[in-house]
Image 1 (cartoon, rainbow, N blue to C red):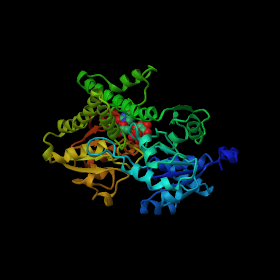
Image 2: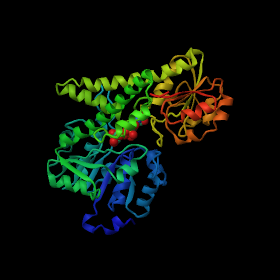
Image 3: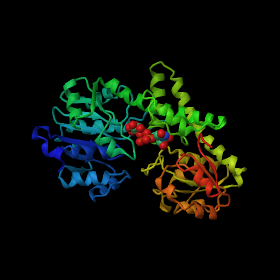
Image 4: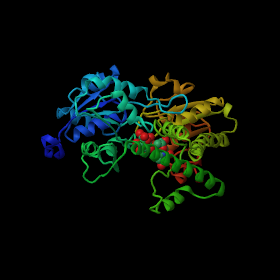
Length: 440
Ligand code: UGA
């Protein structure tokens, strides 16, 4: 038992249900168990549930296996197929179900609506339902209407964890935001996570929902901004690394989230930026700035393709190696991955594309997003016979490769470093041409 849970008084120990064992639900359940609460994680997907029951973790997330094992061993973390059954004795129910992008750019709320309808008749009097999924402004009202119980509260508590560092982010968040009409209920939700040393913002549900979208949109804008600056650096002969370093020293700007790359992606930014444009439109405002941010990101994917073409010439005749397919390092998530988008744009030119990612194996080759891409067993396999290798995910393993060996098996010794992770001088010392993002 952690000291925190030892110290926890019986009255502070609550029964909590987490609905949805995904990238948000799993770390949230683990952290709530670590905080000493009794947690039931409801997951309706039979294969995902079977893995959890067998002590396995269905996603790659550093530290998550230990966190969940710790909860299980302490008897504070259980798994259940039915959300209706799981909620019966719970004081708090966290909805951590997906909110994918609908056809018109708005968030598809069908999973949240279904979960709310399923649990409603089974909630105990006084229960608090917490929306943790990223949901449009007004969803607390929607869920309140679906639950339709005067003895149950519905609040919003958006999640700010990043994939790849989800456990660390959840254990030590920058802030806890709760949107609740009743401030006392809001504080109770915040206190579940142990608030010592963490800033807590209790506000209205609508404001909490907006905080989440505004935060993701701002971060996406920061990234599109620096990617555009990197392009200008390329034309001007300036160095983006020194520029970012110097810019970040201004505490009003901050150095984080300023690494240029192949464009931003993942399961959140693309869908949330589109959703915020759609929400704004519905509210009568054209969010042209955010639309430009999204368009800039689309151009960044093409900018990387252009870099490849500049090295190999006719893409339709070329064989290209790709290092990295996940949308960032330390995750196996390829949803809206810039690496996959760029690989597919290369495939569309007629290029032969062979790729390696430590989380992708030959058995994944049939996945629809990987159509036309040859999956290789290692980074050397992906480089063999190619006219250029493109680094698209910042896996640390790529820094440890034997560059002489890579050079021997390539047709042309050219590396396009879409993440600026390699040392240009070292790469050139081994006889390669090096192309980075915003630096020469
Ligand atoms: C993002 C937010 O950072 C989280 O705060 C939020 O909780 C989450 O979305 C969500 O809404 O659930 P995530 O998508 O997991 O987290 O990952 P990020 O680390 O934000 O990366 C997003 C994209 O930006 C990736 O494609 C990444 O490679 C790119 N990125 C990030 C850069 O290109 N440069 C950077 O300096 C940072």
